[in-house]
Length: 129
Image (cartoon, rainbow, N blue to C red; front, side):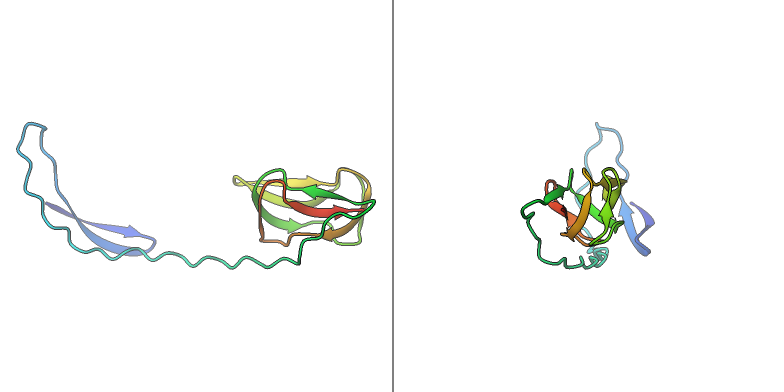
């Protein structure tokens, strides 16, 4: 048995490792494992609560999430007039930040998400009118 110190998330643990000889050697009798303290799990960050979602009304339409991810930043603001192609918000998915643009000229009626909120694919992000 060889002893090693292993550091996990800032906590050092002493571990014993058994060296395995060739395949033809007789296996050593198993030793009972010493109890090892579990590494502490980081606390989950609270997700900001968003306002109730609003469906698109007459003359309005919804901009939906193209993929699951996390809203990083709301670029536009409610009541702001936007042109087609202007960035409304930034959505982080698979370690990449994606700009979600307006698909038509209009006014931002309502954001259905908040910065820091996780979203599913096809979930309504913004209502344009």
